[in-house]
Length: 469
Image (cartoon, rainbow, N blue to C red):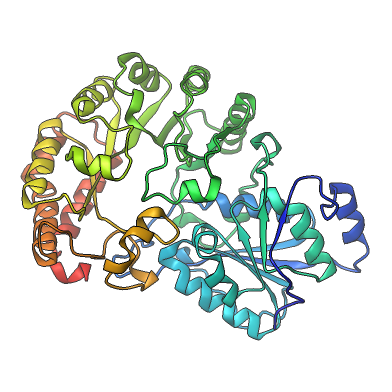
């Protein structure tokens, strides 16, 4: 049963309904005991086992736990690790669940079960933001976008028991107000050993590029925010001290960490002094400059994840991927490899401009340039994006469990769906067969990237087209 839902409210900063930090603590002090929150990272039910094996620590949920823990008691559950959500939720006042599209069905099941027990249910994350009308059917409240920018209003309403349907900030807070994430919430769980050793970290938020298949512009608009460099570096030093070692491995969770080159380059110069290792998703729009790759290598970069997406210029134009210049692809790869930086390259198939030749062109590019870790996906129009609206009449189904970029969503105009999947499977098998791995990886450091290739060899040998329907 939902708690006093009302209409959606968009709240400008400093409005009369915002409570200051001091007022929140005074309000909390009026309760005889602290309210108890259950925070849940749901598992996915995709057939491709996306959440199997080692998983990354959920930085966004850790940040939520850190914020919530200032006023409330927090229990942290990550279903991907094998943690189980208790059937009896009587020990909790609030059940808060984060969700992407591929685990939205599971999030909704958990939300419905908690509502039946009379709990206040809060849904947040990418999918509830993109589909908040749908998400409100399975919750008391939906957090649209980031929780930090609506926290005072949300916390006050939880304490008063007067929840609104949707909490959406009119203006996003600067990242300088972001609290230092408390990793003990995740690391104290009994299955924490299943987390990757990579420490997630955040320096910026947003990406103004605006690819039409990306969810980021809907969540953050055209905003691009960044933390003060000292805050990022202090967080790195904290983890060095916590782990009692210098060579800590960090993974930046930023959407586009290099969008402001001066900020990015200064950050790398300072990181070079710390002795850390790192990886990140990065736009290739200025990686063709040799000095950028040299600095990245000097600062401890082991791997960069790059969305090549396609070898077809018309496809890049159709999805507004203006940062990708086909003529610079090989230069970017060469610059990174000269500085000992491995590449996780993303390639998508199923666009209307794709033909059977697209697969051969991609294979030739990968083998010629010895891309260490190619990742292949099928074009997936995610709900809430311009691409979803454009393709909706052609989408085969709306089963959120299959929105994992590994399922066949629509038939491209220049080949049948059957031919698309036949070529998609063949490409993966060819790239990850033993001889191809040796050709791509010969002379490269014996590290985890070799292990990934070995695992992909075993995985792709079992593939057939039926996996993708």
